[in-house]
Amino acid sequence: MSDLCVVDCGLKTVEILSLLSDLNCSCTEIGLEDARTYPFDQHQGVVISGGAQLFTDRSVSGVLVRMFSFIDDLTVPTLGICLGHQAIGIRHGVKAYRGPERRRKDSIKLVRHHPLTANIRSRTVFVEDHCEGVPLPAGFTLIGFSDHYAVEIMACESKLLFGVQFHPEVSGEPGKQLLRNFVEMTRDRV
Image 1 (cartoon, rainbow, N blue to C red):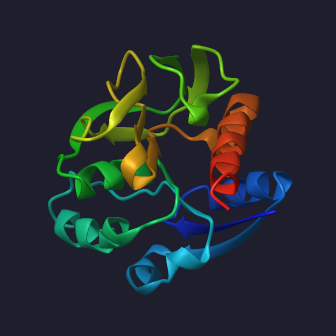
Image 2: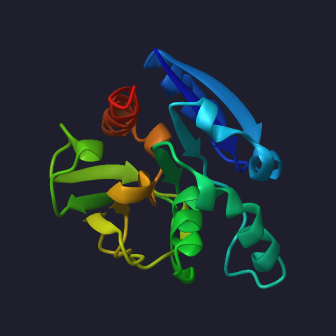
């Protein structure tokens, strides 16, 4: 059994928790507002959910970036989904940008083999629900892209950080496989 912490940023955590339960994971859910003081090292991994906030909204962007400062100190494998993906990028020196609104299924093209995408076809459809993206931060490897966003999947092995711009929790079997792969990556560290 794997023990994960899910950071609830306000979007689709019910689906995330359900899939992780199906994958025999014990999960602790915390709110984003509690993440800066939470002891993440007591878990085998962390999943940061999506959320409705926008990093490009100047009225909240400074506060929002600070709320994700906990990312700087994470030492366990961490998967950022949508907003969580963007937060990982921002905490590693890039700026979010406003892009095309994607509220549908998109084809993601994998550009290299990676444990996070094991057993997933090189061109696979995942569900998108966003209008912002981030460029690839220094020290990260590009794993996948779409016709609309250049960074759909990224990884930083040295920091155990992984990000997906799309929503695996509502993407059917490919999404479940991606989450299964992440869970296996956390179990491999025990």
